[in-house]
Image (cartoon, rainbow, N blue to C red; front, top):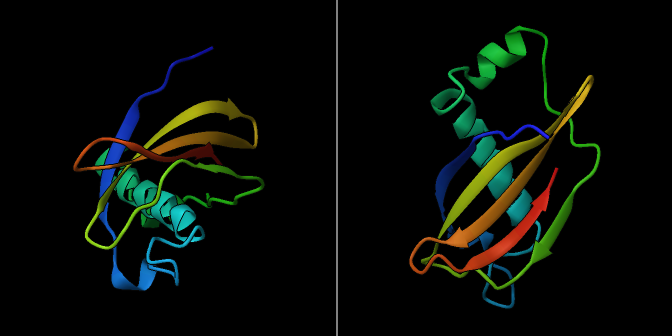
Length: 112
């Protein structure tokens, strides 16, 4: 199996990410990964999302999996690492890991 580079993006937790349990709502983790990929398209791959779309390409999430390890809270910075793990004719599988920047502890992992 081929080995692909991993890229990291830091995302601060915003007040509107917080749920009634005073931690980041589970739905926000997918937003963090998508925001990281958007950042990484231009910064790490050298192609902005606009240029990607102009070529007639797009992202479509057909399936996803997220395993939550520990919560993120207001004031935390999520460090989102993504890596392409598989390339197929009509898509890719992107694995991700999210950690707390301050202590490096795992917060979530999964794939799209």
